[in-house]
Length: 174
Image (cartoon, rainbow, N blue to C red; front, side):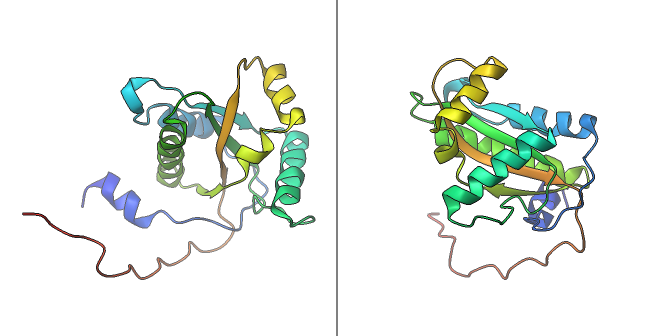
């Protein structure tokens, strides 16, 4: 079986990570895979903010949990690295382009022996002044919409088994 297809079939969302930070080289490869995702008209509009600073990650986790209504819970399941995908608010294909970047990064993480999971609420976080100022402090200009968080780390435990695939989801027009 083709290795890319195999990775697509084997990748799972991970909900338990060790606290060990992945190697920076691995995170850079994952980010590069996200930057190479297909994008509408080749605009390459999605950007990625890599959060590996434990204090920033903790603030983001607390805000994400607050927005979710689950204070006291780590929505990132202990993953030490959070790769936030954002896209220009005025770009009509922002969610599609950002979603493709997220998918590429999750597959790349899997291919490197790391776990990942897509966590929502980036949109709500980056509508808040604190996180808009955070972007400005990083040198990110303009208005951005959060698309998703790719939480990445080493898997703590076994990789989950795949769910049974639902039937009757493919229709051919031959």
